[in-house]
Image 1 (cartoon, one colour):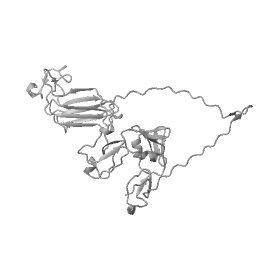
Image 2 (tube, rainbow, N blue to C red):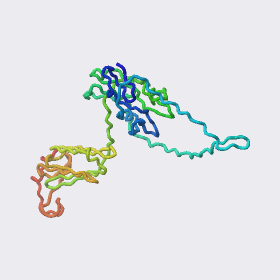
Image 3 (spheres, helix red, strand yellow):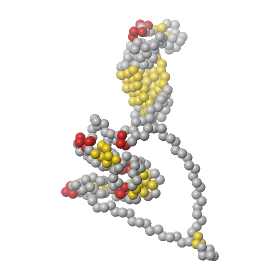
Image 4 (tube, one colour):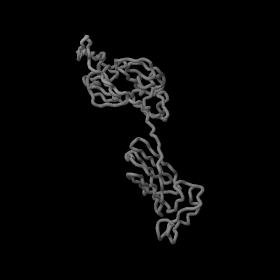
Length: 330
């Protein structure tokens, strides 16, 4: 079947099913300016080339196999001289003195570089038929399970646009027209990749502290600028899982088994401006020597019935069966 040549479409079609609303495409030309990428017919601008290819089409029409129209060359007129000297020398204005910009080396990125050829679909990924391969310059559509094992010809490098020329960092070939750039054949072979790769967020450390009452254990995780929608807390009888996501994309994980059982239904948490406070409801009222199981427990907290919380100032200690060591989780 023929392939539609409309910009942003590239789908195969059957002429018998072609109609005035069958194709969604971009009627304008690609625009690359100062690191931004867009279409002249749309207002949306992106910085990444893969995001540029995903910009939704803005025009509806019929599929076409006609060659794309090439932009007409712009005729530049020669400016008239600003002055003519006695000896006939023509002057065209005083050239502007451009101050040299100070070169500032970019900070070294210590993150490991993940190569495109090392990325693959997981064996249990569910792929919808018709999904296009994510590798650059491939465009093959998923049909069935056999599509996973078919050969993929792609570019592992990044698109490079410099002084009008267009190409890939992995290839030496460069072209001028964008349509020709899309036709540059891949330089590496491998298997298709039909699923997007989820970026693993950078993990950071957060300070945390805790205290307890006869009924609860209170844990404070000190964190600012938390993404409340993505942050999650899971209470289980003998386990606690806290995944803190920040607005800058980083995250902090606090997963730990618990030294004593809790009541998950009665436990709760609250995200504040400077911290996340978790209130774990004790299931048995026993004093905790630590949050996690600990085999080296020699002492533990007791609670005074008079005075302040804890043994400080207390006249009488209340401890469930004196917290015998055999009840502590090891």
